[in-house]
Length: 431
Image 1 (cartoon, rainbow, N blue to C red):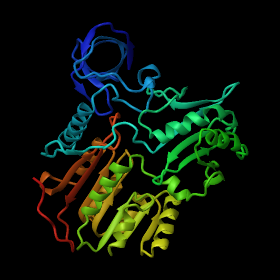
Image 2 (tube, rainbow, N blue to C red):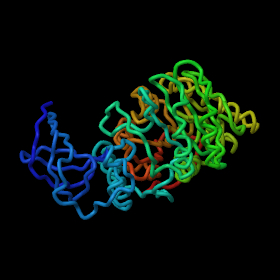
Image 3 (cartoon, rainbow, N blue to C red):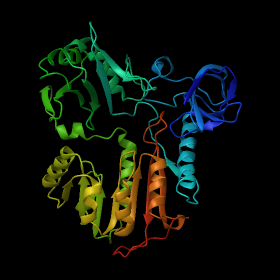
Image 4 (cartoon, helix red, strand yellow):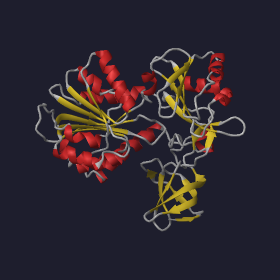
């Protein structure tokens, strides 16, 4: 990689997965420029050339493109906050770009002959996040508490407010900021603010050196602003402990959805993809059982696999309380799947890295009749579908979900019938 400086003006053509604008240098090399909009004419700085592409920063916006708008958040450009990539774009442009990014990945990487998917929109384009996590950096005075910059710099800028967070969280943050000196010492402290489905506010302080013994200043600061909040401490590698404030179920605090409305729509689509005639269902990367539990409650024989033992414990607790028969398996999916197949339906919701190659091998060989794949990365989704030999004719559902407006992240649901023997009755394939 070489680093050069360039004052040449380039024009942004499109938006790439990851959020950067796409332009071309004078020699034809593709250059990715974060926080640019289609049609922007910009100069570049800190051009970093790789073998087949380059990455650069905006030097100056010579002429803004027709779609550029003023970001709602002061931190977006001033502090280069890493939380959002697209606040400078209208929501309609964001949505169209997400549809195209998913479609492009499936066509280019997955070799699937498909159109861009329909997108389930978020009812809230700002103020939707029910949780934010802040990093604490100790200083000689009060600690600096805020978010990381987009460029991967370890430095933290002090947060004033977050425009994509629920207003209940911004009010809570404003109230407790003056009391941050009461946080525990240490270089790995995190502060999580969360509003639960019932509107209750929570402050979860994690990490630090030794036990956190001084939650009272934060509680008093919240109370002085007329806010009730439950304060929790989560020691490194340990369970959450309520320190002060109203009683609450720690499971509801630990395993909540970031965008509740879109998460509900996605879950409903997943549940709807499991036919009533399916007997055995595997739910892989299952979290705390949000999908497995309702399926087991419908009478399916459900086995869920999850590596997080706390999530497994939460799912088992919920199953016992509901009187639902659900088998919970703790461990890595790639270590467990071989003994759990075959199944009529396999649901997967892997991390951004997608399915391990051993998992796709097992699914291809021992497989299921139907695959329900929830993805947070279109590129790894497309790669996995190609490894599985999925064709356009196998697809029953292809749908995108705008879980995180103002960011370049998109969730995708693919339902594919793999042609394996099964007890399920298949509906017609999608066009």
